[in-house]
Image 1 (cartoon, rainbow, N blue to C red):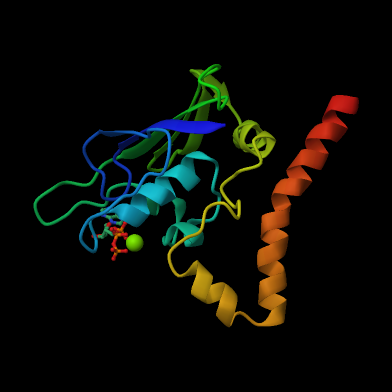
Image 2: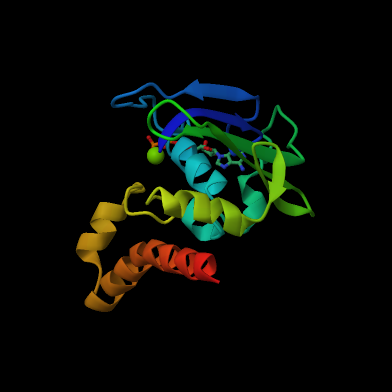
Length: 175
Ligand code: ATP
Ligand code: MG
């Protein structure tokens, strides 16, 4: 699977609709402190089904919605779209997650309403996901080094959660 395009609207500091093309090869995001680099990575994790507000540096899920500034009103929803392909330039899938204040999250795959679980399975299939060890958040390396053995085990179990999804999918296919 390859990430092709990311669209954000009302997500954290990305208040106006923004679109980023992800070209083949290595992509670097540079900018001053606080410009939204980490927010971009969090947008990717969020659209992949991240369910923990804490791992998105928030207290509640609605904290991903643009909260407003001294000069700009807050937004009532946040939406992130991630376009992926099969890794060979074929079979494109658009994953969309939207959250509205007071209404929770909704997911779409190629325009069809789906459950969080369907999105999680899509990425589990590609051996990636919101908790995949392929996504390393700021400060995470230091946290792994400083962790007590029990905490480190929890991190490994979190990473292994993806393996669990694989197993559940196989089970479902055998029924
Ligand atoms: P650094 O280089 O320090 O790591 P960064 O480029 O990773 O910075 P981010 O952490 O992605 O920056 O962005 C932080 C900014 O996002 C802050 O200015 C914060 O106020 C803003 N922000 C986060 N959540 C929201 C929200 N819900 N509404 C509005 N702004 C938000
Ligand atoms: Mg950062």
